[in-house]
Image 1 (tube, one colour):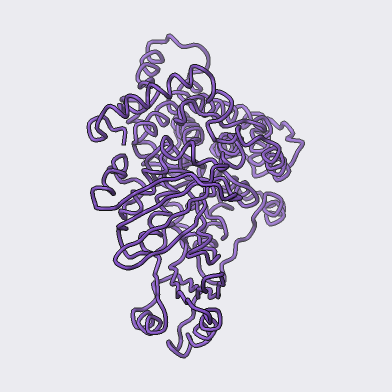
Image 2 (cartoon, one colour):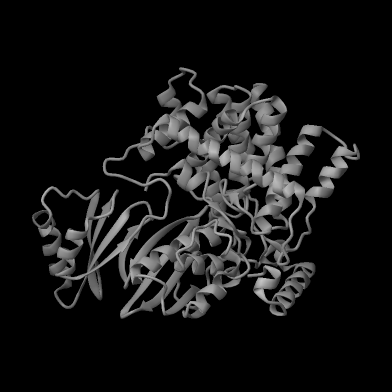
Length: 534
């Protein structure tokens, strides 16, 4: 699937500690709900012991997101903290188990669910930043990302493969003029699946004809920007972008608009309007964080109001603009930790650095929301160049994949605000990411707060410094694409314990273990509705 700025980079709009856990799990849950035709009666969720989820699925919101999706909720639904209890209240018999199955991806979900005579297994992975891939249904391998309407014709029995191929060949005769965006026959040991991917829902009369031959399941898209047949993008790396620009001096944000227009079939106005809407949401979240947030199941109290008071009283040292960036970072992180609405940019764990830097600096420069949107689009295109060959997931790459990516994106966004050139924006991104290679992911008590707040502050400050270095003509030395490739190699050399498993770094210090025990005791001793623990 081709990366979209709104699908993969600046988004989703969500609640929860982690986009890899909350938003991704919710999307997997939505697909699973469609598979069985509604809220399941029984659900078994299995996580591989060697993956990241056995130690993080509860504290970082996988359970919450998955159950919310199975209830049909959106990723920003205010009810999400109570999703597990709500699913059980709806009659679902729910079990979570840890198994030894050797799943290659650390964020693999194995679901076995049933409803009204429908029983299925589903395997899916969270690939980072809220993105997912459905990789098997009923042990039949397939690939779906939630960007299409998926119509699945399930063929079972000894002649399943032949039946599936015969049915696939007859679809044009069953519905003259019907042209799916993609059609494939997927074979497994227990059966075969005809997979139809379409931009719009398949008409009911074709569903009825297919249902006469085999079981049909329809899965609705879960991503805001859908895919379509013949989709192309003008470039997918920084090097390709520079070749397309050919020294014409087109600003990075304009290339970002062109990219998203091609990727999503959108107009220029639609691309800009979508990003302005995100800017307005983010500004509201920053204001909410500065006003103060409350939530019981978190480590840190509301610190943004105190920082704002100290700043206003002149008690803080250093550059006032940088201090306002720190304030905005803190505000956004506290909104996230209190289950408020945020935007994963590029992830929930690194949600604050980019928008805090861009919005604060734009305000300081007297720039309007349209300028902020252009800067975020420029940043989003840098994110495309990261997640196309690699990942934003800390479970894959450590915090260098989250905080490092956020710093690179923010640096390019700041250069864009300053009307810098395309080469300067890419140089700033390279400089910012270079200085964050090797950053581990080790959240204290499995909450995405400590040291995540400090790392977001560091990413934003790093982005500002590197943007100014690039604007002043500093050389990046290593081209951006090569920095991303280096980060991916470093990720492969990291021990599993240092990639968001709560098994290394600060996560296993004595103080962290005490905090984890205290939070677990408090959560066990209160009602979810009363304390907001979920």
